[in-house]
Amino acid sequence: MYKKLNEEEQRVILHKGTEAPFSGKYENFFDEGIYCCKQCGSALYESKDKFHSGCGWPSFDSCIEGAIREQLDKDGRRIEIVCAKCGGHLGHIFRGEGFTPKNTRHCVNSIALEFQGN
Image (cartoon, rainbow, N blue to C red; front, side, top):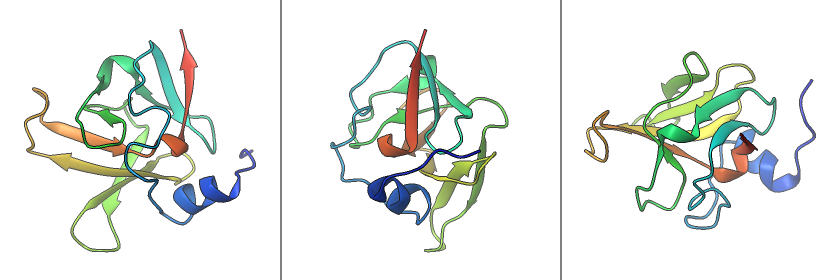
């Protein structure tokens, strides 16, 4: 059972859009808890894996095992990340940037997430 999404959530999650940089509510948010998929509620990221990258979107260097699926973006250059359960678009993954020791950045649209605090 999926949640009813508003027009902007549909644009990003279903139609693979992107929210404006520095506009999302989780970009500078660092409370402890779990970030879940806005559409299906699946747990995606733990707060311990979130870091500030300065890119304008929430950044994580790891996901909950099995929660994310990677696929080639329609532009053929980037790797898109989607919820493994419902296929909702989350953002893109980048490697080799050196932000963290894991050398991985999941760049996620805030609008695709729902936070559950500890």
